[in-house]
Length: 359
Image (spheres, rainbow, N blue to C red):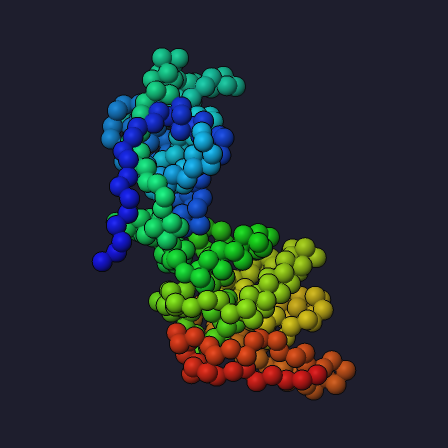
């Protein structure tokens, strides 16, 4: 049986107070387990209509953390979409729309640029409207993630969002990578936790070196949930890989969009390429990436994670070794990947180590 949480406090806060906290950074809408913004503009505007007409709005769930004797930080566990809609309305970014008139009439919070707006009385009523908030205290990150997961049971989360909600040393490491290498977002699909999923898939690829495609949500979930610490060798290698990709982006960002936008599976194999052949000049990785993109597209119409595309890309990267060996003026770099038994979730037998080559 799971350990019981401290009993939460049910309180109400006005829209005006919640908005001010958002403006002052006293509400954290983006803890690492949170979803991206998924509500459409119309859905956000209809939330405003519910508030103005006293319809039920589900409570917000906060994890409260004391900053000093007078200030608290509220981490949003559930309610990000609602709070975002409130903030955008009070910032005049979205209008109030009424479903009853077919969303024809647009009214903004304030009369700016001659836009139709709420009356002063309506604006005051909106400011003073209250939202029920459930406030927890002294929660650990794991407990926050557990609450989030349980609340979302009735919501259709994407596979990437389900992965992002996992709490483990490896999951924490993946979050750290993304926060420390934010430039990666410029070459990724940033919707609904996809960057986190790609980073975990690339970590799984470079650590386990599967011979066949197995980067399914089930495999990556098992990989993230393993009870173990992240090997120091993997930490060092990952830092080198993602720093190299950032250097490639800084040198030529258009490279990743040339001919075709970099597919997620190609990103994973770029990390595998750098892991397998480290310390090459940047231009070598750039040239190999372009060649790899052309090679896989010559063989497949649909570039996504599946057995055929995986096999094509893995053979391409692995065969680079023979090219290096045959080129006596360009010796094969020593492979730095740590001599550590791979985790049991991999398809590779436990205890198998990479065969190192020497210069």
